[in-house]
Image 1 (cartoon, rainbow, N blue to C red):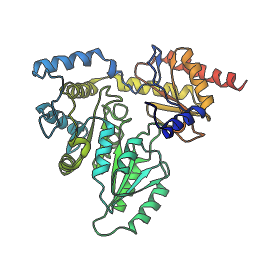
Image 2 (cartoon, rainbow, N blue to C red):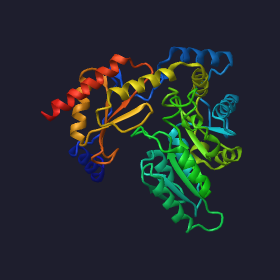
Image 3 (cartoon, rainbow, N blue to C red):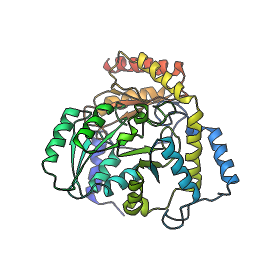
Image 4 (cartoon, rainbow, N blue to C red):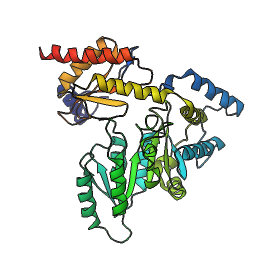
Length: 382
């Protein structure tokens, strides 16, 4: 059966403006694109320890068998939630099946009708989707612009009635730019204005902090944030996510977060992998190695047009889908896995090459890919 004409037309439009997304099988290239910042996803040590743990605890199950509220709440889940809340210096934690599920579950249920959500204009799509499901009003503020945020807060406060509140939402590291807000300043602003701050730490965990706890803990700000979201599909190399907050917040989410209530729980194997990955994070030397590579990359690219940031994500803005795709293919043809980020994923004119750095990248690989990038600019202009 043919698909409806309206759907076909949207695909044709993507093809015509050179922005059609296609699935591809990963090649055996030098990795400058995955989110596996510490190499945990390919760690044989973690793999073997997870298997051993499941055997020793007699959790040889292929699935959770149901939602957490029905048959799926094995002791392991609560043990790991306690482990994560302790690690992240929080009161309580609640596991979700993915970062997307966590953001959908939180923002669709916590902000109430009459409340206001103020979100950074570059916030992740999963947060936008969750906000879209909320009954609260929502407005964006300019990226990392505290002056604009303060104006939006003051304007919103004029419309609030009794018991209405404001939620401010940002990321500690933005996934498409690799930059960070001034977290000290935004925490102070939210405290002074008596609004609730929510921070997604997806791309900060495993990268910042002495033991990879994230940027908020590196800055000793974690206790001043209402809710924090950590996902495990990046530096932790596995799957799932956790929301860290108060015990009361956890209890609320268990009762009202639909993406938690109405889904089969993560498999015991997935939860055990989270546990072992966090155990490894405490003792690994990979975080320090990652920072050495970040510094080497920044030094090598200081003459190029990269967005400023100290995380593992570094983006070189190359306007135009055709140009950025051409340069990406050039790098890929030489054995370097570097991805082009196209509009409409990012605004038109802000297309970019997105480099993800890892603890396992070598200094030679970093220098060679940067040299090739410089040559590609010259050759394209010619």
